[in-house]
Length: 324
Image (cartoon, rainbow, N blue to C red; front, side, top):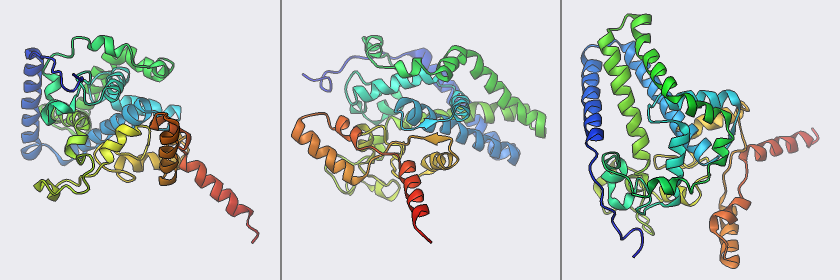
């Protein structure tokens, strides 16, 4: 039997269940206060913090550190490290380690967010149950040498349990100090509500193939009324084939979206370089090579990846050489 067929029994972790119940109940109180009592400045501030947190998650932990989709300048890497810390979900090092294990054993019992167990398990039930008995052993098989050689990642890992509480307290007390917001509103909105929403942005990433992905070989999502709410495609499945493509969005899109736009703006400012992507011609060449040589498709595709910034610079240089 395969890993997909063998179900490893999981036991409920009641401390985790109680913790998340408390967190979500407090977030609901925060939502109530945001609607009926909070100042508009606090609501706008909270939205900005959520956006920064998601940037740290998607552009930083996911695309930059987990999949090495591009290289970033030191100042941007520090900003993304602080932004990821705001989520209060653990260090970049630990997040990337779990995510690489997720990709390595996607859809099997070794996958900590196994989507084969259904949407709820992939989304958040995995937080409430025990891991695979050999989970720690599987983590040791994941290559993380690049993270261990990254001073920013290791610095954040060492100081995480100091940085996270300090950032949380700083962001919570600022509204009270700067625009005289109620401390209760600030704690429940900027604290509990913001952290809970940011965590859901992270959790739902692991269920992307279920939410936004089509079943293999299906061209249209006509089997469900969700087509009126969600645009389904095969881009989530593509991400698990070529995870290093910087254009593949976390939430079911490709080549567009807020996070991809941020990367392109930073690339224009020369804060981001070596963006990795591939075009249709490169995909065809990679498939032909994989079919003829028997090598892994991902390895073949690596050869045909290119940096669109270099292509743009080449075009600009070619235009400069054209006589006027």
